[in-house]
Image (cartoon, rainbow, N blue to C red; front, side, top):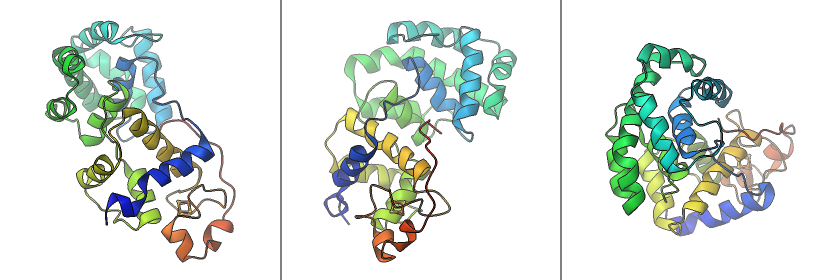
Length: 249
Ligand code: SF4
């Protein structure tokens, strides 16, 4: 199956027409986006927000919007912060000792790599170096590069796999890199498009395409979704209305 067969752009456009721009990532600065991407591993976004409030109070994350130059100062402070105190600040996000180590490691990576990455914007170089940081997997790396550095790399998560399995019959066990490649090879290399596409998938998964099944007749992919069409669209039409929910998580 090729990206053309999958009509990836059509999936994006249907979601965009229904939901509109999602204005992602929920964070005021590149450094806050990076911190959020590390802390959101294995927890919900509400817990991440509590940890980020603590980090802002401790001045390890800028309180307002800030550019990459200012982000360097915060990364430097985070890299040198006592581990026990850092862990206590991020306790609400869970696995706080592990995440304190990861956050410090990513802060050191940021100090060494943010400026060269901004200078040459080579996404493959940036991705390779970030994936070498202990505890940083492909979803975290791609989230940081796309949402903090505005680099064209596609973020895949469990929502992406679930939706693509239902809408286009792709195995839900597909390897991260294979599904990422499918999007990268068959869409124009456009960070704004990748940014919006991932955010729309999250919105769809939370509002309609939930783990327990189809979420409602208002799903913008109803007419193009294989599992819905195969069920004669009755499965979705009989489901209850979904709650409004838009935050990252
Ligand atoms: S029609 Fe149902 S299964 Fe298909 S994408 Fe929408 S909610 Fe998911």
